Image (cartoon, rainbow, N blue to C red; front, side, top):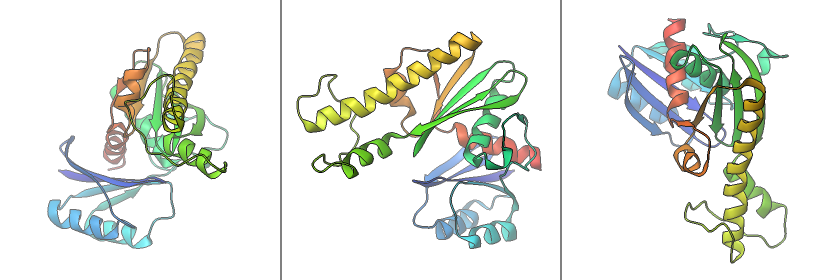
Length: 240
């Protein structure tokens, strides 16, 4: 049984094809994603599909998935393996629902803090009773670089690099150290605050840059770049 899982974020559109629970293929999509979705459907012929979208994506994608697969659009009304103990469940982003689902699926007996590194950093706390309590959101890596460039007269827009000094010696290295080390210490600090309240819990770091940030952190953290896709697959199974 094959399932195509689609993650439409603010920065990138991504897809992963699962076969019997294992990732067979993963890629980023071009432009609005419609052409690449059709190509993946023709190539892998999945029986099921699920889409997590936090953007206004092209309606033709839903139509195409509906015609060729058993399609599920992720929302707070989906059947989930956890409860939503937040003030306004309908406003919860689909990406955060997928991360919570993956946490409960893979670590069902512990508290879980899932940290998603995307356009924004999302902190998502799911307790051992499988209740999603919420968390926090802060600017992501690219947003921090772009913000300093756009809101100043002279600071350049730079690209991320992982080989940088703690003490910057020019504008570029000052920006790299400030943004990347600043994010790492933010993550460490928030994890520490959760530790003071909850004691032992599992921490999962995910997103494209998670392995780099995990190496900068002192805390014991499980890094999995594909964690969101695994959550989408688990939700697809639940809703089918």
